[in-house]
Amino acid sequence: MKRILTVFILFLIPLSSFSQSGIGIRGVFGYSGGTFGGVALTYQNIGNFEINGAWNSQGVAVTGLKLFELVDAGAVSFYTGIGGGIGTPDKFESVQAAVVATLGMGVLLGPLQFSLDWRPEYELVNPDSDPWRFNFGFAMRFMFPEKG
Image (cartoon, rainbow, N blue to C red; front, side, top):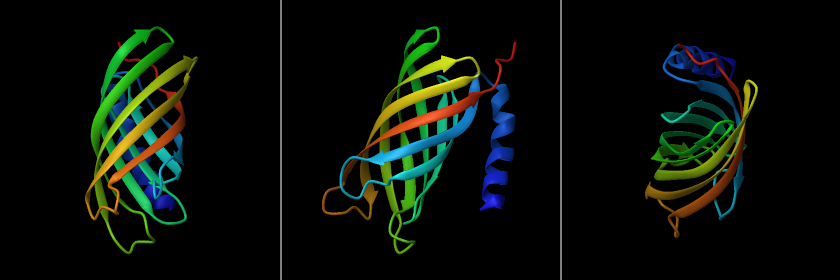
């Protein structure tokens, strides 16, 4: 687990030079049956993209999203995005892949960003009887200073 965390952080540090970006954790709270719930390492480049690596007692998941800023009111922003995810939700017995969307808001307090989002997912690979999933997430990220 330490190796995965180290590789994740080393991969993301060079990305921080593109715009204001941050690294942190995201708590995932399932809303519909079978939705992946747990904790995620998260990297977000504001107005650009977000990458999450999540795990819980059942498996792991990776999600990538292209983000679009809807409203930027200084320390408060609203955003949406679309992307994809892949995961093993049942103790590595199968793999599922999904199209993922997001709608959220972030509040920047000094170097910390707090965000709340809602993510609908539609499973494309190995869907359950109902391919729609929804979850909510609360994230806290340390934001790197903006580069000139």
